[in-house]
Length: 386
Image (cartoon, rainbow, N blue to C red; front, side, top):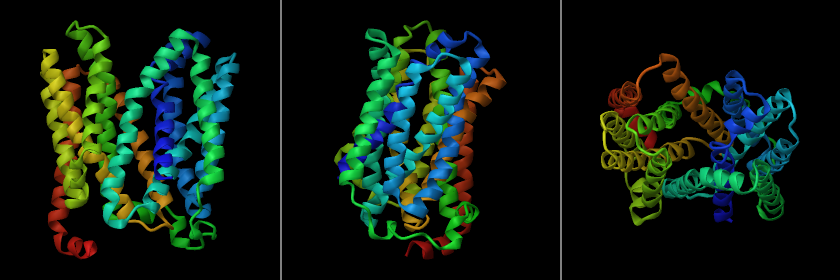
C-alpha cells in the first residue's frame, strides 16, 4: 500500500509537470493576449496555495484518506472540463478549480506516508517519496508534449483524469483509515495555523521549502534563456533539467539514502541548500554544455539532500493531529517560492547570470540565518531532539 501512495504522488506531480509544455499554447488558442496567458499559467499556483492550506485543516479534522480520495476525484473531474473550454472566463474558472482541488493531493499523500512511517525511518521514507516527485519531473513534460503533438491536448487531460479517478476508487476501497482518523479533532490548538508557524523546526522547514522553490522557479525561468543565449538547441533545456532530476532520483533510491536517517535532518537540509547555492553560482558563469551538465548534477545532489530532509523535519516535529496543516502550509510555501522566484526576477529584468546569483544569495542567506539560530539555541534544541 505504501507504493500505491508513492504512485499517487507521481500522478499528482505528473498532473502539474505535464502542463508545462502545453498550458501556454492551450491558453493562447483561447486568447492570444500575453496578459491572459500569464494569468492562466499563474492562476494554478495561486489557487494551489489556497488548496494546500484548506487541505491541512480538512486532514486534521477528518483524516488524510478522505482528503486524498476527494482530491483525486475532484481534480480528475476538473481535468475533463478542459476539453469543453470555449471562452477565456471558462478557462480561468477551470484553472482556478484545478489548482484548488489539486492542492488537496500532495499534503494528503505526504501525511499518509508520514503517518505510516517509522519515526526513525522518516528520512528514508521521504527520500523514496522524493524519487516519486523526481520521476514525475522527468516523465510529466515528456508525456504532455508527446501526447499533445501526436494526438491532442485534450488527450493529455483525459488520460490523467482517468488515472486520477481510477486511483480515487482504488484508494477509497483499499486504503485503510487509521483509527484516530475516524475521530473528530477537538484540540482547539490544532485548529490554528499560527502556532505551527511559530514552531521553530517547522519554521525552518518552511524557510527551506521557500528558498528551494525560489531557486527552482529561477532555474525554470532562466535556464532556457541561458541555453538560448549560448546558441544551443532548445532541447538541451529539457535534457539539463532531466539531468538534475535523474541525479536526485539515484541518490533517493540507492543505498546512500540511509544518510537521511543517520544524520540530523537539519544538517542534511543546510548542506543541500549550500550545494544548490554553489551550483547556481557556478551555473551563472557556465559557457559550455559540459560545464552546465556538471552544474545540474551538483544541483540535483543538493536537491536530493534538501527535499527529504525538510519533509522528514515536518513528520518528526508534528503529531497526527497537526500534521495535515503542517504539510499543507509546507506545500503552500512550495508554490509561493516558485511564483516568487520567476515573478520577482522577471520584474527585475535581470540577466540569467545575475538571476542565478540572486537565487544563490537567497539560499545562502537562509542557511546563515538557520546556522546562527541553531548555534544560539543549541542547548534547548538538543533537548527537543531527545
